[in-house]
Image (tube, rainbow, N blue to C red):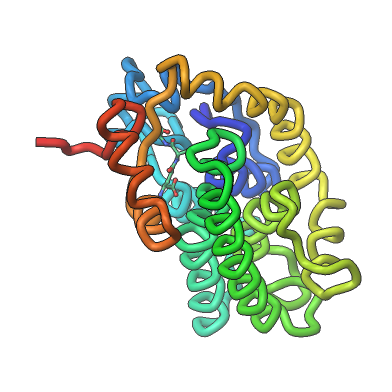
Length: 260
Ligand SMILES: N[C@@H](CCC(=O)N[C@@H](CS)C(=O)NCC(=O)O)C(=O)O
């Protein structure tokens, strides 16, 4: 199997943790033009939105981290990641949905401000404060879901844990982690000890220094960021309306296929 990915993508991290938990062999590749919307070839044909992760498995071409996880679960059922109980399955999927849509958007918004410097001064401070408040609401929701259990699904590390780990880890990187000694912090420490999670986070750490030049790349015109779905909503609701208008005018913000 070949996984098109970027090590810093939380969605790609989900898939790599799942592949590793299932003990599957895979190769990785970051598409040329990733982040610009200019990719061509096998990846672009497989993923109309030109988004990672995208999985190639023989003839199968599968985009979207959730659909890839479902595919892996269907194709390799011997080491299941979803629990059997219908309510527990629904719980895992709800946790995944909240993390993929709402939590990811906040993390991404912090990167737009902190690394790409879309806002500075008072605006940056206000947007970062909004992100901090949103993050603690999401973390409180997740903490209630975890309760006093070892893993989100109970005794076994699985789907929901895979779906939370990349996003909570990103919060720590952004300085918005959960308090020391809180159940979620201890949960993340346990998750990081798993070889699947440790390897995936180490791959992200190895390229993280590249973010130091993000603002420079944006200013030089070599970046054109995809403002989609919940990410666009985050900007609009968190004080970034003018950022969107300026970025569209400068051509460093783009929307998603199909453009018409
Ligand atoms: N819903 C998708 C979202 C994937 C996504 O947004 N990936 C980002 C990277 S984190 C991407 O490849 N964006 C295209 C781009 O930046 O050009 C999933 O769950 O896989």
